[in-house]
Length: 188
Image (tube, rainbow, N blue to C red; front, side):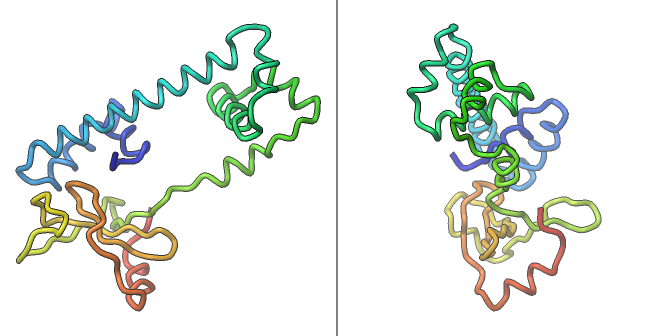
């Protein structure tokens, strides 16, 4: 899958879906299949997340004996479940509280929350915050999807040209141009 969870939420959320789909259609040009493909990807991501959530909730609340199940899990899985419960319900279940009281080492949740960052920042216009788009007037993007529009993404070290239609990296900017490009627009 080529889209992030944040993009999937934007496509599926009733408050943002019209704008998200209009943006996909704009960048994809006349390629209607790309819009349908992006919506399908968003639906697949949403289903995966919901299935994982149901498995986690089942593990956490399956029965009174789930405390013993939790003790048998790896440290990483317990931390992951604990973090999800805190994030979803702003509290942990009694079993997690019991584990914490017994001093079973759990990573500080604030550290986990602060460590979650977007993989890449996208270049946007300063005035309206919309994605800063570029197009090639004489050729199509090398990804082969048929689009000639692209935008820039920064991963903390490098800037990539990314196809607007299929979200594929189409090139990497040379290092000597990165600092100057980062001064243009805002990156979010």
